[in-house]
Length: 419
Image 1 (cartoon, rainbow, N blue to C red):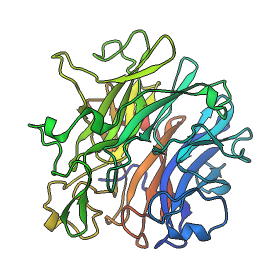
Image 2: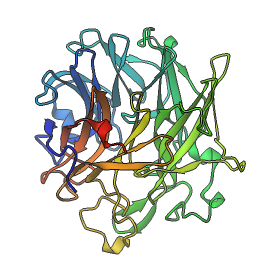
Image 3: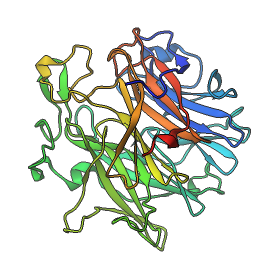
């Protein structure tokens, strides 16, 4: 199958691919069609680079963020800033640009000149620990909404998704978002506070059995972390015919990546806005009364991005395509990162009118080998096109996870892909 946008521009290339890695790309287009790209750099080599650096993200991997801009529709890029935090996402509020991420606490910077210059970083929380990615931003009724994970239970060994709690941040678009008082934050529980793997049966989740507070070693170098969730996207169901539509427009839904060891599911949480401004997280239910914590979503096992397009009234989903997650661990390609479900070189696009039934629109990009990762992407709408910023790799990449490129892709006339 021919990819929709394999002809791409390289936004950033690591000159030390063995110890400087690329993470968390985010993209936004300004009113004047300047493109703003943000991304993180990690690895031991970052400590030798000029520019501000954040706290170590894990182990000895130092973190820093970069901002690049393009004034020629993404064909070329130039750096305009650096910041000392991780998991950054760029977004617009009125005429002002913001980049929000975390270095333990939530951090934010702003620009009033379309990304030419940037403010100093400002903390939005105190004494908290966060996790996230460049997922979507939802706008409604003069407010914006975005979601990150609070690192609630810190005593779980290894990759800790079981101890994450998804929390929605809300602010008025015309407020000063550098002021922590402009933001409201929803309540939430961590995954392991609401469900145990022992509660589940009959649909193959979790795929592998693990201890509750430590990873399982399945084969040499192949690790499965305790089940959990991460990287939430915010959606609101606009269609009055949707079972989960709220005519009062006071209900949001979070769709989260699930760490189950398998594929095909995302997690779902409902967030209710109260008259007093609080936001309360709870389960969604189906007509039988059963709670719907898991829902089908292609690529829900890795980071995905959901974007609602008002013109087509469709949700567009960017995610990683799995082709052989049922392969025995002993028969996996040696280059595959960790488990069979961790296939990262095929970036797919779907559309849906309800966020449950997804229609395949095409492959955005596909690497010629698994080392040529095309994953962890973000997207924005530019007129009739989709703009996509992607974590990518070539032959010099350390592996499909620790990649050496940030690439830009454009899917032209994307609404014509709907059928």
